[in-house]
Image (cartoon, rainbow, N blue to C red):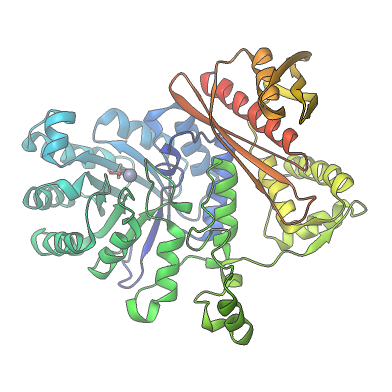
Length: 506
Ligand code: KIV
Ligand code: ZN
């Protein structure tokens, strides 16, 4: 690989670190959808999973490796032979496989977690890189908790892995602890004191516990780092990872000052964010930079006045450059399949035949109810269809009664293996009554932890999108549903979560 001096390689870890966020559980099909979108976004490396961690992670890495040939696919492995062999096996079909192996380097981790000496860690790291080379010549090594490690030891560790054949060395701020100037000093020190560092790509992987992941990644770039590990919408362990769209748009907006570039196709940023949001169920804060719903809204009179005179007064990024367009009324109940497919193509959405059929059916029934269908509606329909888990429980009907002076009641019919089961309950409002009715049928003991509702588009007849998180046996699972009726959207979201619980326990 020729290392381009001013190019910043974007290593996307949405499907690995991102998926480690509490409550996210993506099926292989969903991961493949996201990976295909990441390819359209043109990230350099897709970290597809951690194959030893579960059968489903193994299968996802395998599937993505078999289907996406035009970029590097990475798999994570701890520094032991079992993990590395699983990663190598899952990556077998990949055209450009990367094994990403890691071990902790901080004394805190060595003492309390690994219970190993520094010498043992050096040995394990060397063996891990050598083992990985059996499967690919592209090996990345990460020193976990690097930012709380002894700098001298870190350089020694990096020297060992570079000598053993690692082509990328990664400096993770695993617990999001470092502050920008300190990180700059550490990176300078590593560059000055690690033999062989000029022959490898130096990477960073920053977590956002103190809200500094993007600032630290930027500081690292200014100090010579050429790969950034990040996730779409900044999802990931705890407070998440550096947000891909923020890192990329900082580089794009300030390229003259920074003197670096990425190969990201920025017009795909909005679609990527919305697919990840929809499939993971992780809500994006309205004020989130670049992809928040209000990121390009101007509210104050003085701002609106300026915008009308010249957009440059208050806008540093043209929203259309990142694929954000004002919504148009496009289709209705008389629109046919052809018009629907044409609009999907214009929106850059490609679907497999069976998904297309389902999406078209949903579009027709929504158009019957709602009349005019706009771009946001179409995207919501498609993303909801893609967000498919095997339907152990499927909604057949529901009936609710509620009002100011009566207790809410709900009756729900759910099909399980060909038989429709009926459950009824009262509750604190129609949604609560419906969830209780569903519990009577599924017999799953789950606690509602979060409930979010938002309108997909404007207007009184907008589609409502409900995203929930439920907790069962200590794990959190998400569910989502859309409908013009918010009780129905809530019921669908709850059933979706129940299906995910069943899927994850099978
Ligand atoms: O945060 C971290 O240290 C990681 C490593 C596995 C790179 O995710
Ligand atoms: Zn991480």
